[in-house]
Length: 222
Image (cartoon, rainbow, N blue to C red; front, top):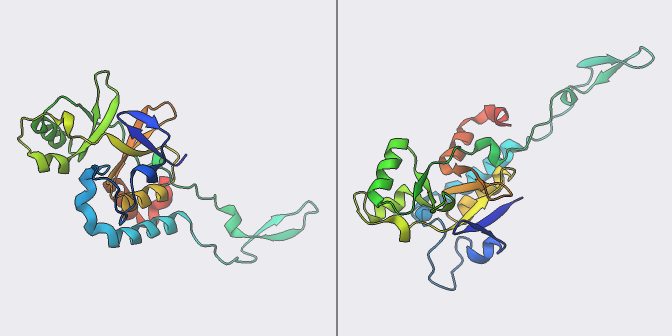
């Protein structure tokens, strides 16, 4: 499964690009962009494309030349034959959302104030909180940038200001797809849901940066 759209906590069939025009494409109406907290991060666009390419290159290593006669094995007739040492290495598993997502996801009720949401973020040392409805179901997301824009000490409820339409993914979504979406749609967090709309985790920009920093040890994520 690739990307999905969550609207007010419900999965909808509308294609992502129908609701969220890619970077540089003008919207036909002045609706608020999805994950609006990422709108201030346009400066990362140039570096972001390089970042995406690095992720793709890390997850798919180029083939190496064979080293003949490095290893030998017995055939059925007890004769020796050369073995390609590359065949002895386990095939790398593709990196998916499940490998990098943060979980459990921290939440907050939609009735709380901006000040309460800010204090909770500071306590948990996170930059995003999933907003929940009356039954505890996830209905949106709010970021630290959203709170800063409205005031960290504001007594106003976040109910009318958190982001209600989300671009989301499943646990088996390829990391290259997620990283490309962060750049294309100017978002900086993506919740991860299963087929039953259960919230499994969240992938933030910091998770992808942590993956990039792992460098030569990226195989350990798989």
